[in-house]
Length: 320
Image (tube, rainbow, N blue to C red; front, side, top):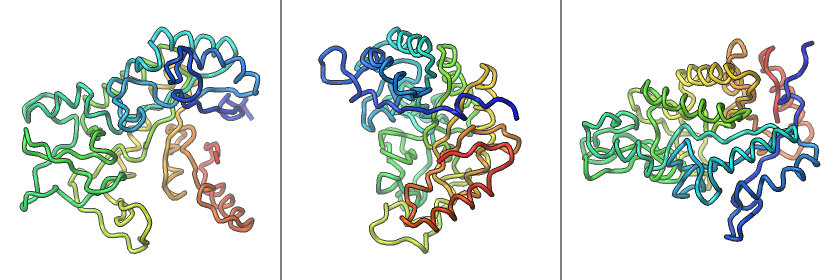
């Protein structure tokens, strides 16, 4: 057997920057604070530090509403501070992973501000805009994962835009080749700065149905579940074309040597394992969250483990 990659044998430690270590007394954790604690983290025996989002953001969703993919929010520091953090981590033998949030941007991102400025703007198609339904309401029945319709009316241009999460988080149109190139440039920006990999936010949501068909009702819905569970997410998640995007991300990372691609994915196992790629050309670790909702029963947990292990492709590395 060939030697294991670092991420196959390693321990990854997630840091939430806002609350980890404040270096300047403003009450908010920052990159300098994290850097000062790297010897402590290394002493724990970890192999990598994964940072939750540190990009400029209005913080409607604690940094998962990105206003600039290629900079650092001033509350956390500067690109110079990031370089010091990454250099010190590497000196200590630690890898550096970033959260990558490609499904949606902030509504304050310059791309979206251009997109909503007019229907003729060159970036209009960078997001998902649709005409109203005949009754003037939303274009279809898609629901936000934060509650209510996933469509937000824009008075200026007379169309709705789609947001899988908050209305401040419009979804990017990954069917647009310009969006794909721009996001590939983002990956390269951080890889050029020594990043060792990415945890990709909501990877399975990147592509939506090209015909914008209504999602069917979910017969298994029970009161008390999140509102969007009223529907089967047939047309808003896990579309076949998403795997081409994952392969493209993998190919970009491979240009930089051993870099890890981790995908946040909440799907049943038969769908989940497809994100490894047919030939190992997908995500290194599509997250497997089964244990979060497992019944506290040894037999049930054993069944989950057997089913997952038997479904893994021969080239796939398990994760729990």
